[in-house]
Image: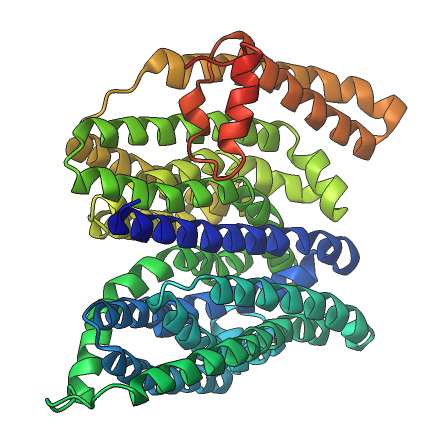
Length: 539
């Protein structure tokens, strides 16, 4: 095996490790809202979600890009055999991130009441916003250490810290929410929000041990080498390099949270403008942001892993000038996305109320869920096409298209929520429109850069036929199963039967090929061999 091949395999393995940790964290982040919603109610989750949308946007602005920049600049120094310089980069970046995190935490803490009163338009949200402020500092520290390990291409520690953070966060959210509920929903929501601070602190604390072990080994190596003859690069130059790299990454990382911030700022204001009370407006916002959008994001966990896998795969094909390989991988990624997104969208649309009743004990949250369900398809297409564009080195295009999508969403949200007949559904429709615009613009860019042709029969017609049959079974089956089984058991049964109908129809139509399993690390190849042996899939 060549050294280049070994390096690429290490990179791919690292990408899969981080993707797996991120997927697990996202799943856990979606699942914990089920008991939270069932026990606490939609007003509580509205307060919790209002603070959390501001918090995630501030993370993207203040820390996310710097984390990635640290790993990139360190990796460059290490590749040049300048390990001493790499550690100097880390030390300077650690101070930079600590300052950025501290400033962000203080800014959020000092403006928490103003944000609650004038932006969220509900003073009860104050506790949630205030409780999240310290988390910004710990996230910054955690991010700096993750950047250090990623610079060395050691992805195990960052992945475990990500899972550790989520486990502590979820556990703390549930425990604090239940413990503080007797003191009122506002304080309980603040306690739940403080779970993010506990989680970030736990994630940062975990990384200290492997960092000190690594740092000790590096000091021993550096002690055995001669000191550099040239003076070290000025700290100001290092900071400038990190900031220049961090800005576009931060913009990319903050765009999706901006979608949530638009709802946090616009939904309560516009709902109150058409006659809803602050309590009811917050409850409807909670149904959309914490119930409906959580379920919309759940299928996208799969395309997040697909996107992560596509980036190195497309990059490798481009480096080899393998145009056919780029088109093949793009086509496979698009097919896999549509195969997953179509049944997810239809299922969430047709069973919106029963699913929200089953998971959250709030079937009324099915109203915004049904309205926003189409966003599942467009969000997943946006993620996959972003992976293709990032693999081609055009990271600017998906960022630009997402910004356009956010602007479209913001304008439509303001207009549509103000229509009394639409109310909260106006926010849902604006989200669909935002992701639709971003996905279509990405598709146009991919078509222009890659020039691949869609096989409509394999990519569109056959999956659509299977999805329509599944939808018919779900639509006709649930009303007949609900009376004898009860709504919850009927929902579970209908989802299971619908999934089986969709899967078997795909196999009977010959709509699945061996190549469609290529982006599933670990299980893809064995599963493809098994189905091919049973003659269910083609080459």
